[in-house]
Each structure stands twice: as C-alpha cells, then as structure tokens.
Image 1 (tube, rainbow, N blue to C red):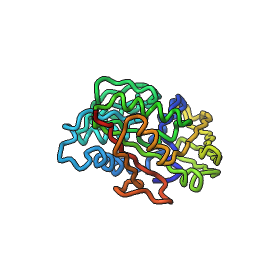
Image 2: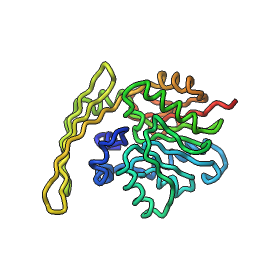
Image 3: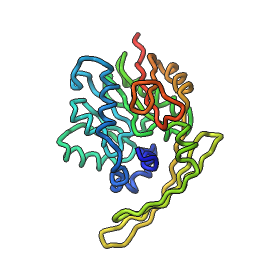
Length: 266
C-alpha cells in the first residue's frame, strides 16, 4: 500500500465527517480486493465451510465500507460499525452499488454493543492504531469478547512502530488532485511511539470555490507482546501475529501486522 494513504484510516472521532466524501478518492490505490481475500482466509482459518455458514462478522471501524461490501459479496454475514455517521452514509450508498445489504451501526468500538453472540469481530485499516491509550485497547478487547461466542475470532491489522517511526514519521506530504488538494505534516513522538498528523484540505465545492478545513489525527504503535498480554487478560487464546498479508510471522521491517485470536471456550 502507498504509505501516505495507509494513514487515511477510520478514526475513533467525528473528524472523518469532514471529508468522508473524498475518502475513497484518497484511497484509490489500495488493493481492497486482495485485502478482503486475506481476511477471508483469516476468518475461515482453514475450515472447509462456506462464508455464509460461519455466522455474523462484526467489522469495527468499517469507514466507508470498502472491506465490508467485499466480504459481504463473498457471502459473509456482515455488520458494520463506525463512530462517523457520514462515513456510514457513504458505506450505505456503496452497498447499494455493490448489490449487498447489511446493517450499519454508529458506535464507539470501545463500547461495542451488538445483539447476540457473533462468529468474529474485525478491526481493519489501522483502527486499533487510533486508540491513543493502552486502556482504550483493553476496553475494545473486553467489548469484543462480550459480543463473541466461545471460540469466536478477533482479527485485525495495525501499522507497526517501524512504519510510524521510520516510514511516515516527521514527513511532509502534499498533493493536488482534481477538485482537491492537501498539505500533510507528520510529527513522530518517540516517548509514546505515536505520530501526530496535521492535515489541511482544500476541497472544491459545486460553485467552484474551494473549502478549506484542517484535521489532526494520531496513530499509536502497539507491540505484539503488549497486545498478547491484553488479549489474554480479556479471555483470548491461540493468539497469532502475521506479517502484512502473509501467513507467517512478522519481520522487523514489516509496515503492517495482522492479528488473529480466539475467544477462550468455557
């Protein structure tokens, strides 16, 4: 993935309402088809079952639904969750164009509450990196455990410390596209292993004038050992980490890792 665009992920605040309409344009070089196929493999976990037989899959931080619609078309019973109502409205329109239908809920994933006991919970596209404090991660893992059935899966991906510190930390980016431009300054904070992103957007309105708005986002890295400890405390076992879109352990220079854990059975 293009390193500048992987930062455009679903955040836990309402800021995404300001540019939900241009989000997909900024992410147009991301191979969502390949990403969805990888999550399919994580979810099925080698089982010889149809996606429709797995049970419901709750995708947290689903944003505009780029993965949600693709997994739904594969046959998974999806439920999308995001804190931004505007992002969900874009996702709803996308579902109509893809010919799929699944419920969408505006909700903070740290307080996740959905009906029943579900087969899996996903948190895709760096959603976990947007949780600023370890306590927020603990709340999310505990909430995921509450809505999963025994043996259910938690699958997610996140950007690594290597990426935040070395690839995108302290970088300046700028780009002009038809109808839109942005100026983007990153600042890396070693003490918290986090990046603060200050972004100024210029988006063309229907009358030809450009609307300017500013965003501030933060991504925080979490080491696998810390995540494994939190997951165990929340009741998960069989915790596995994979290098970006590979079924093998992460390498030191991987920019993204995937995680799969199973809720402990009684």
